[in-house]
Length: 562
Image 1 (cartoon, rainbow, N blue to C red):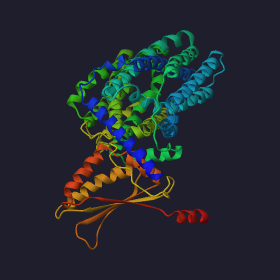
Image 2 (cartoon, helix red, strand yellow; image 1 turned 60 degrees about the vertical axis):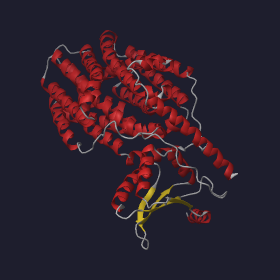
Image 3 (spheres, helix red, strand yellow; image 1 turned 90 degrees about the horizontal axis):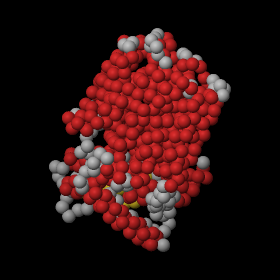
Image 4 (tube, rainbow, N blue to C red; image 1 turned 30 degrees about the horizontal axis):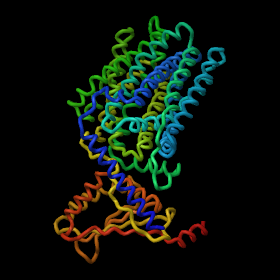
């Protein structure tokens, strides 16, 4: 029976190798044009439906922000609306990312869209009837934030499913452009509607905007990927996602650089409603125009980014965007005329899209498909957590001093953050592909080794050439990162006390099932490192890999003692 299972797994690995070869060939072909993903019917339908939904979302942002200035026009309460929007994503991103990786994403997204539509509709009805208070607005905004938190990781993982690998980069660019077109259109429309009919109709229109996405998801005949191995459990999937994020250098760099920027950038988002209200002749149309200027600047930035990326590295692009955003914050603190402020907001939109898209590309480049939703969820958690914390902090600063003083302080902080986070390099596009190469053969074991047995001890023995020890140990430090990202713990390398130039590598895994998953998730970069290690070994020697499992009786005794 055990041999039959191993044979099926071996056949599955061969099929996976063929798929990877096909995908690699496609990715090395002629690069796709900026608009080519729209020729794919499902992507085109999702893109158009999402564009309409995003317009409704940005209309809602204007309606909620302006409504709070009428219900409770204090800096803390106005900033609390932004905090209520972003805090749930900070709290729920990891559980949502795990769910997005282990259950059917289509049904999951449908349920979340229903929640968002119902919550927005309730807020619209309460506002139209005059029942909404400041705390009802905060509570329902928080409820919508919960829906967004549950949606974002799953939605981020959908695009690679509906477009081939060769179309992925332009598809991501089109999604970003659609978001910023919505940011340019939605606030302007909301400003007109709020000035004529109030915030209630804006909320109701947002509820209707979800119907298009729900329709497309309902009609999507998704073929869920299948595995011969049992599915991951929720808590185990969360642990795996956090473990990968903790040990992936590029993802950590994106998070640190992002946190250093977003905590200061949140000042403009949190205080812009009050700033708009305090302008001469200011009103909801003024607020909408300023936010629309951000979207227009971001759309312009989307067209400029390809040229900027050819001239600047990721690190310098994020640094330049941060300095430009700091200049926009300084302009907000000193200017009091509408059109100069619109130009400053357009500059902030350009900087925003440059920074956010660069950080997202860095995160995507660092993540293999099996942990993509969870890795992006961790990135979103840092992003939204920084925005939530910053919004509340700048609201407090503005209430204690003034709006202008808070914006000026945030401007200085954004400049300092560039220097403080510079050591976290974002790398470049030349990094090896982290996608699994599926090259490890499935180990043969006797029938008593079941999937739940563990922990597992894996050893690998190396006979190193004389004079190559330093290079060997340097390479092993890179191997250690891959072991830890894919589930290994207690990793170490030991030198044999009796045999010179003889080393043994050891690491542990939670269970035999988790170790089988490691065999599915071997990235091409690790394969390259292992190939280099072979060149450092003695001639006619091979790496000897041995597996040990904790004795079942020992585990039973531990359970009884507990």
